[in-house]
Image 1 (spheres, helix red, strand yellow):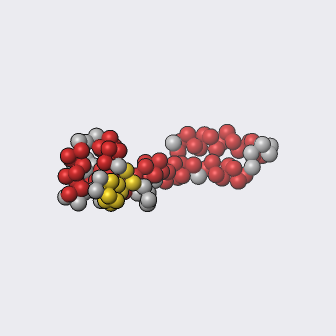
Image 2 (cartoon, rainbow, N blue to C red; image 1 turned 120 degrees about the vertical axis):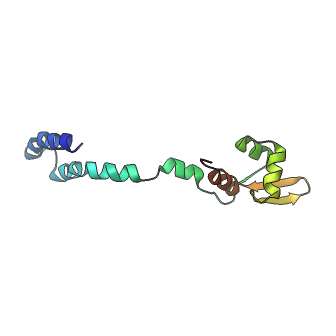
Image 3 (cartoon, rainbow, N blue to C red; image 1 turned 90 degrees about the vertical axis):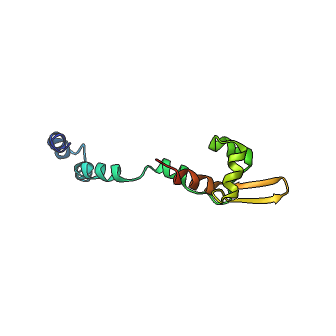
Length: 111
């Protein structure tokens, strides 16, 4: 990339002299290889947003089963063992905290 960048800079220098490209733009272009390396090291913001817990988001048992691709019995076991946090609103109304679903998935990544 550095070799190609020096070629690009040499091609752009006459354009700066003629006023087509500003000196500031040329300086930014010179910094691109360093910026690219920093960007590659950054976490993917889309993935981060998907995994970020969202307060106030809840799922039903059925939705949780679909998300986790698990049987109802498995979801109830996870709730009983504390792997999934939930709120019982009534005898037959349970809401599972979305952030606990995300945490359960993250805890079992690459295992």
